[in-house]
Length: 380
View 1 (cartoon, rainbow, N blue to C red):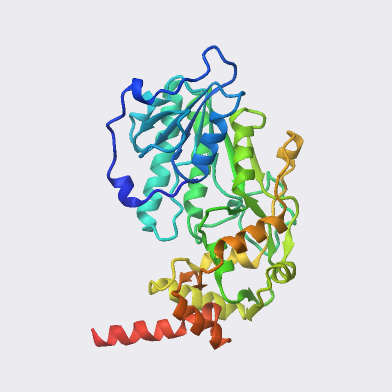
View 2: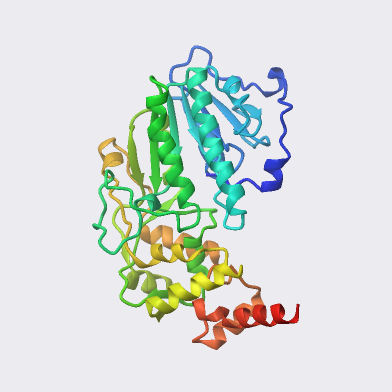
């Protein structure tokens, strides 16, 4: 899923290149579907576009984004996915994989929701108008909710019990609602929903930032369980969906999960345990005064299990290329040198001070920032 820069989104480029300049050779007379990918210039969208363009099972790839990407063997259309003109660009496509989502922690929440929800609405309506028969949506296993009574693992058809209290989860729940409604509003349109576990590989989320802290925050009495999904495995799962080897709603991730103790042993990072009231209260206050990008609701996903079965993909013949241990190692390598306390990125000097302070790491490491903010308000 891409996380387009808000300024890039605002400056739409609706001047689509001429067909002579943008049309890839394709596979005339070739078998397989024509697949359109939104958010095709960056992130998961770029990886999927490249994979589909190289596949003998795909007749043609239509790439849609606000700027041209690096995949030359695709037909590019440059526009905002909220533009109704996207219907014209989707004509001839059999399947649309919608990956133009903004899940950036630093995005304005209202603008992020407006982009994600309106974009999904427009793509679903445009796909139906263009005669597309399937749309693939990518949300997250976070929609199941992180709750102390969750089964380990959750069945893929388990009730979605998440709330809108965590970053972007409200958007994802609304996207799923739109996906369920679309076939009723547009008979003949089918919707597939893909729900990855903790996504790793060029991603920046509240959950990946958890591993940038000098200590791993553990809430007393909680039962964390970690299941990862490498972007390469997500891309192959999305390819399965695009080729209609699987449909409906399904999860994607590594097999099994890691307990918190295993994560600490593998990472070599020690824990800092805090009472629930302290951790949640501090997280809420820090977010309220603007010192951290993550709301307190994000903490639930580090406290309670939300591991999901990937049996539907297994039944379709798919297997993950990565294990949880391998993805965790890749994540630790990726975040090396980054320093985060309570979801807030620190400079090297601040991080050194936080590490030396010992008991002030994790949420309590921001206490000095809170005091500084209060003093600044008094001076104003």
